Length: 120
Image (cartoon, rainbow, N blue to C red; front, side, top):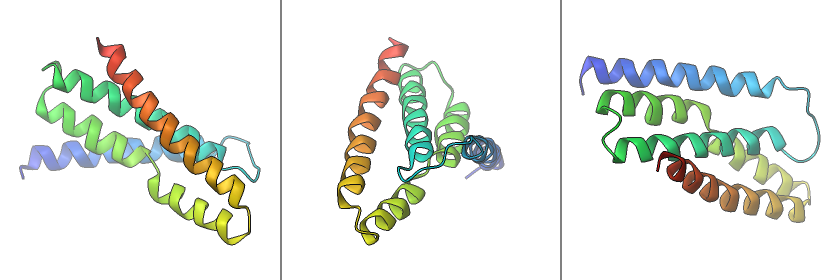
């Protein structure tokens, strides 16, 4: 692990975390964790786009680390998704938990593919 790689991931992670925090400040509040879903979908399309560029040799390994591991890793919120889903299940909102899980998975994979397709 080089110092350059460490800095690329760290700086990207900081930017991703700041972006995630910024989205969490939007004035939406409700039972359904919409902001986390939106955050994960935005992160999924971004990582799809980055993977597409990197796979075509259009992004250097350093910038790939910065964007894919750093920014996307700091921005997406799978751990938050997991705890929110558990909370919905624990509060007896099984249907809402299943809807959230299905939308996160299906739409997440779809927008990764979209991000990769946008590169083409």
